[in-house]
Image (tube, rainbow, N blue to C red; front, side, top):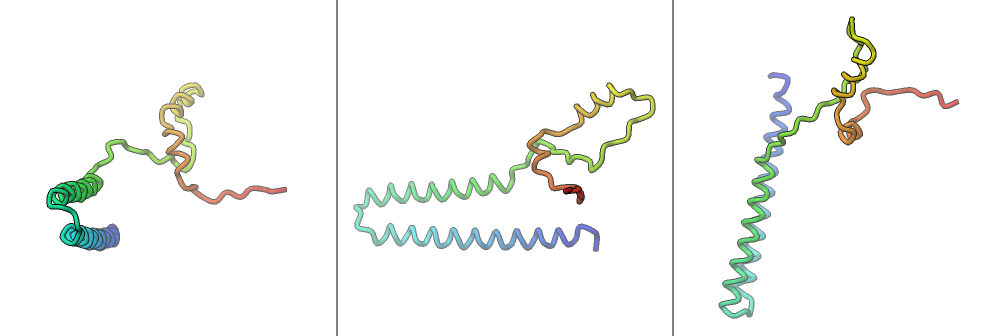
Length: 124
């Protein structure tokens, strides 16, 4: 087994469970809506329009789920390195500052990252 085999198995199991939950959800939602239409005291015209809008809503729900499943994020987020890179030979301090300014990710991405290691502070 390769190093990513466990993550693939977990991913497949997650997709199966998620798909089953969606199928059960749609089965009960559609079945309950059909029972509501058949046993309600609305006239035929109201039942037709309620059915059209109800099933359009369920279709919109499925299209939204399909969009979220197949959507690919185009923006690449870089993780900050755990330590400051060593200055290269022949690189003066102003060039190093320009390199740091260009290579740092956005502040909102930096704030979302987990700490890279334990830092012990002297509390005295």
